[in-house]
Image 1 (cartoon, helix red, strand yellow):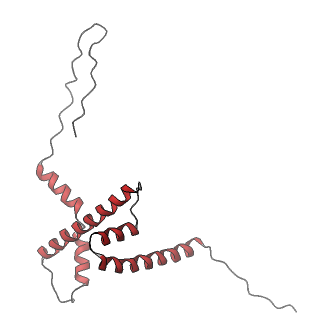
Image 2 (cartoon, one colour; image 1 turned 120 degrees about the vertical axis):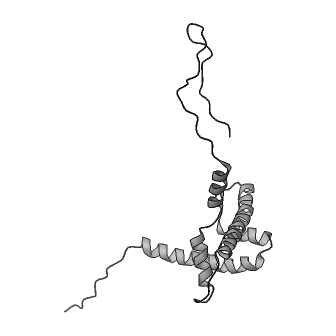
Image 3 (cartoon, one colour; image 1 turned 30 degrees about the horizontal axis):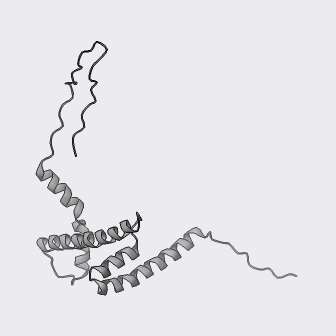
Length: 152
């Protein structure tokens, strides 16, 4: 991306060239290290989330080394990017802007993860079912029904 420059008229009313303003300081350039750190932070899932999921999968007395957490963090982040980019490509070909659950399942099957896709298909159906039932109870106002009185 190129740096924006001020628009300077070629000549003023007296046919003199107008010099560029000199009072604006140059912005400090971003170092390669800052760019690398920024991109890494954006690319990876939060380490705390990865660590929590990993801890849930091992006995409570087990310890997980920091480098193991970082390795899994990189792997799952790369896996998600890989699947998502395939799903995004499908959406782009179909001229859609939103990636849906079916697009992710399609991408997983296309990329050879059909065993995982079958399990996720079940989870997606359960998620939608619980989401639909939660939405129905949230939008439906509670009705207070008076008990029927017997006529005397």
